[in-house]
Amino acid sequence: MSRRAVVIGAGLAGMLAAAALSAVADEVIVLDRDDLPEGPEHRRGLPQGRHAHLLMAGGLASMEDLVPGVSMRKHLLAAGAHEIPLGSGMVALTPEGWLRRWRHPGPRMLTCTRALLDWAVRGAVLDGTGVEIRKARVLELTGSRQRVTGVRLSAAGGEEELAADFVVDASGRGSRITTWLAGLGVGDVREKTVDAGLVNATRLYRTPEGAGRFPLTMVQSDPYQGRPGRSGMVLPIEGDRWMVSLAGTRGGGEPPSDPDAFLRYTLDLPDPIVGRLISGAEPLTDVHVSRSTSNHRRYLEKVRSWPDRLVVLGDALATFNPAYGQGMSVAALGARELDGELRRSGLDAPGLARRVQRRVAAPVEAAWTMAVSQDVWYPGTRGGSPGVADRLVTAYTRRLIRTATGSYPAASALWDVMSMTTGPTRLLRPSTVLATLNGPPLPAAVGAPLTEDERAILRRLDRTGR
Image (cartoon, rainbow, N blue to C red):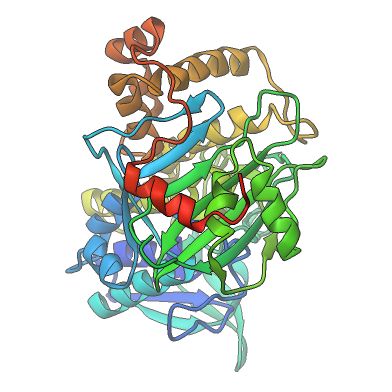
């Protein structure tokens, strides 16, 4: 008998879930309410689509496992993405000082526009599977509190019911999953929001001549001074461009949309390196501003009676402050958990959806803890404040980061967790704890750790006189 799977949402999480389902279902239909672009272009359904996105090594590894017949790394690099080694290819000022650059490259992340990433993943999945995309808006789930049997949707031909043997909600930040579950009689969904009021402002620049290999440059926000957070980064993207993305929290840290004020903001960061770089670069776009940045989580793994044949992934399950660069990797890790359970048990196995939902909670919890444990320290944060556990975690984490500015073992542990190649328990290994307690064996770096060639590029671009 033919088996059909339906995925709600054609974003990253939805297409990766569709790839996983294509191995076990005869028909996989992806439903999305947007007109999807033919090329790597921004679309309305991605509120953070114009801002900085980092694909961490753990997320990329999951994609490699999911998309059949394609090396997603090679595919994205061929499309113009950049590969950044965390250990040697990044210049970062943390609240505890400048991170050193080491000979060992460490885990690698990819940088490109979100539009390019979504387009490349969507094309790879469609080319390698029989997945079909239809334009439609999902109105509700069909079935009962025991089992989902499909969806009711609205499309050009009117409303209809689409039967399915399995449904995945990957409809993103605006998912109506809580309402849909209530319609089935499932009402005990616990949700939590922690909102630091972060505002993102992003502008694209032409990469200056001779600066194509300049490292990704980042001035991180400091949550621990009792002041609004302010941060900025310059990252290379496709098309010989720099993406310059600023972020600040409510109460005076919000970055502006005015181009002149945008530059002034970068120069007022704890170090003016971002502003010095872009002061001599050619802007290509206006400043795009977005405010859809809160941490929001639905604890679906804790629902007492979860309906069979339904899984929720990606931003429909949890969203994170985008400043931490975790959302895409968490989505990919969740799709890989779905893929693993499908291959072990098959599409028809009883309790499959419940097992997947519980397994997906692990990477969500790791990312949530990392984001919220910092956001609760900003003044004006809504939905959370530092508790005893937060204070203990923060004290250890700050000491670890301070140690990582001059200790390779501590830096290596930090890279592994940042890249999501391992869980937070990596930070509690005896070797990491010992390094953290001993502190950095090397003195703190004075100024950004640039090579002589990179310093020459910075001086050539700097129009600020600083």
